[in-house]
Length: 132
Image 1 (cartoon, rainbow, N blue to C red):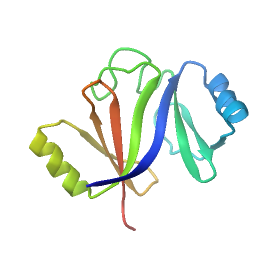
Image 2: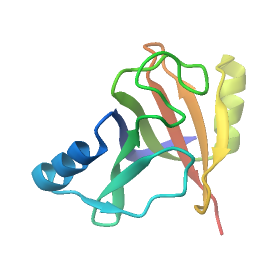
Image 3: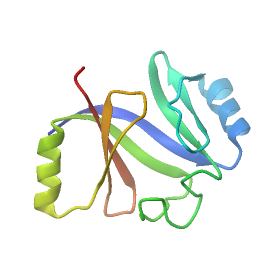
Image 4: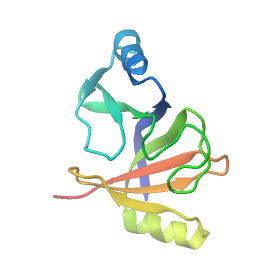
């Protein structure tokens, strides 16, 4: 398994519009395409890269308490994501270390994901592009 780069960060918000304005007007990112998830949100891009994923209130992830996968919520910082390769190698590594994880495929994108939680309660997302 090889990590090649930081893919994106994700933040939660109770005020989607203020968050959008900040990242567009202050930081200089632009709202772009986002998969049709079951929870509200938007993705902010630098060029072709969606660097900041914003998760709105009332979706599958709450601003406090536990997340859908049972991990403790980490305030407004939701997770850190890495682009990775060799999903089979990662699954073997996680099994050997007895680290629980959740697997999913993003609707409409050729990406498989593994989610796990670090010792500090921060969710880590690993994105494995699927060869087409």
